[in-house]
Length: 170
Image (cartoon, rainbow, N blue to C red; front, side, top):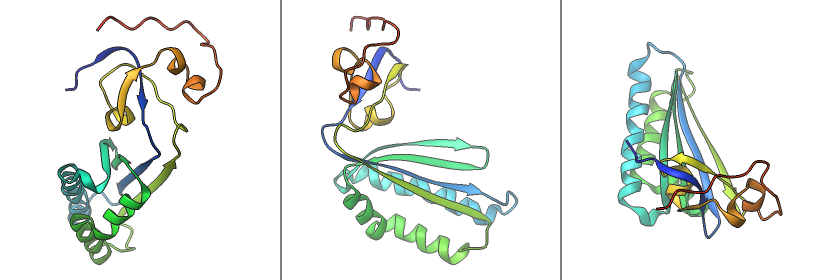
């Protein structure tokens, strides 16, 4: 389990970046022979990305739900994400296998969403949390001063609605 960092922190990214959601949904629970291979392809792709950081993958996390899984990923650029999608060995194999064995039969759903985030057009806060999400993909910094409120993190002049407690001494 990740270590909790007491206090209020935010994420800092120096450039534009991409947030990519990719997931699957089990539509027919008893069709294990259909959805299990789709599920098992995901860890191979993530391992490939962590080993080959030059591909542009920054970090990611799994989120399980009743019928499926979602991976939230952070990428340096859309071009790098698209290049991996079109040329990554494990992704291409999974894509071909899905189209061949499932296609449009309805047993398993897959989806993705891509968000291009311009420099400075994001905000995040982590209060008494392990380093995760965007802060893990980028930098984990104290949410104080110009980074204290959501509005300030977005470059607006906003006062806190309630006083923020001071961060513990490191």
